[in-house]
Image (cartoon, rainbow, N blue to C red):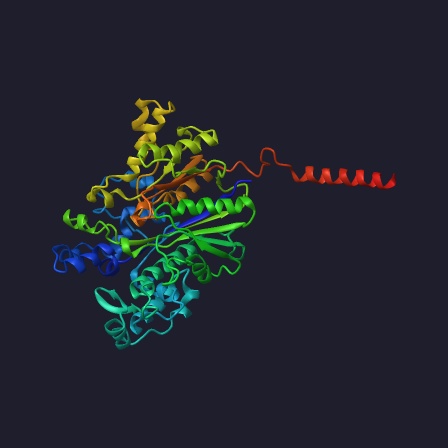
Length: 510
């Protein structure tokens, strides 16, 4: 039986001060051009938490509105607000920065995170009032004196944490000489862990039939890497997240492949469940501080707010077939091989056309294609265009070339082939997976039958190869717990055993 998608969750963390002090675009600008006009103007373009929550694309990511409702809104979206927007959506939440600092402390296993006592008292109150964080409150501690924080920042190379541009805490380095355990890298890694925990908490909370003790494997698939000087990137975020979530019966590991990692993780999870090695595999990813305001210079130039003001996270649970949840077609996996080529047509042929052919499907049999779901409002000012629409156009063109779509129907195909982009530009976060939550619901209610998740990655960024990367899966409606073709039913097995015993008894009598 094919494995199924039991649930999905999506979270964002509004990070106004981390934009300035942790985003790579800003930290590099501060090192190279400390007096730049961009750095002077940047604070004026950073939104409040309330504005970030009310931003239509952010609401779509957490399930506050649907992609269809987002698409119906004329752009720009940044000058519009969702009325009575809640920080909590059906898939997750948008967390404010101060509470997230609390989650950093919860994630801290080596006493590296120092939070000022007054702020910690406020965070504790917020944790007590939060529907998912109350049980984690004891892990926060009492906080630290400001003098201790200032000493760590000024004399011990600690990474400062700010609220409203005022020092409120820090993350200490984990080793005096190890370059892979510096305070900056430890901050990045703790952010991955904390945002992954938040996504996991929401997944477990939102689906009643998910039991902690039944999750037996975890795959973490973000873009950061934890390790030390002797094993850079050795891992393991997966078990670190599982420990805080209380997944006592789970083991796990990390998968890395730039933006394509989530799709590789989904395929690996599906394969582990299909094989029977594990029954329930949690795929989870935290977000990246490095990509905060990645395109900020272009947003400021065009007098826009900083769109990339959130850290992302998600979680997806892959389980044994329950006869109801949408299935993952493990017999039709798209893969970009070493020899596939990196042209857009070659990529789409490998990731879309070939798995469709293997599944006996046509291009129009897929209701929703989900590739790079970046919010176009973030990418267009930087010259990258509307990435999801560009993908739909390439898929449509390939369908015409294959004789499966009339050229005259291309404009209609572009509109219907997938959702409008709504995910933050956090690298791996928008790569295919944001559509799973909505598409899963639509498959369950019968409004669509199939989703294709397409992950693509840029391996050349690591300077080890010029190769491109990618893989894809087809998710479709569950037809029930029917025996697969060629399989032997339990009743048939019982009959065969009874017949064998009968023959053996006759042999003994003779």
